[in-house]
Image (cartoon, rainbow, N blue to C red):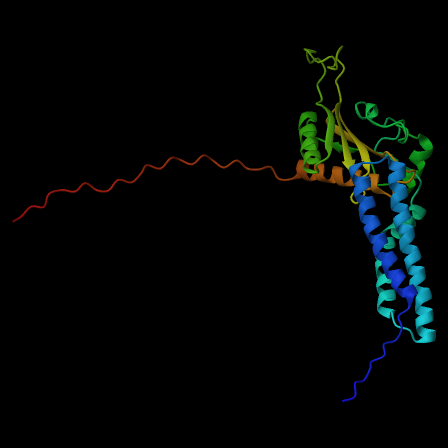
Length: 298
């Protein structure tokens, strides 16, 4: 009996290494995202780790293309490894490439507010910000002009609701979004007694309601600070919102989207139909079985 030997085509070593490098970059990216979100390292080394992992993904793609040339020319095996490396690498760099495109299209601002002339101020959050974060002071009229050109719909929310109701609804929406509330001061009308609160209004001056909270970006979990100001007006309330990123010179539109969604959610509750209270039901008496009488024999 003659045994036939099956000779397999040699496999391209570049294809194998491109797949290995792509898998390593996938694991490194996953670990880097966990490090960034957990805050185990400072922001600069954490982002450097993530950038290094994405750079390895690009190298894996280049190696896969070079391996494809040798596979086509010399008839080597390993096409499956090269294709896997390209798919993994493209999956890793697709979202960063999209963010880079948005950074090119959007203005380089990181602080967005509905009131550029008198923006709501960070008070409690200002004491929590690290030194390497962006400045807490608003960037000024130049940033306001860039914001107006890019996000013309970011405007104050004027409502006829009373200030306390607007404050309660804003707190409800922020709590539902699971933002970390740092400080919350309800509005007070003019002439309210000071009591034990040193920040209460005096001399007939009303106090604005203030809510300071910290939101997180979707994937990397970057902290982004938000302050909501509830200001009484003659016929209702004016709601102003300010959202600022702690890191980076371009927020990629996240702050404007956050303000837009927050005001929209508040308006949906303010303008929604009021829950009609159901009239109390009358208690029903328990039915008693009829009394059993004695049967009369005739």
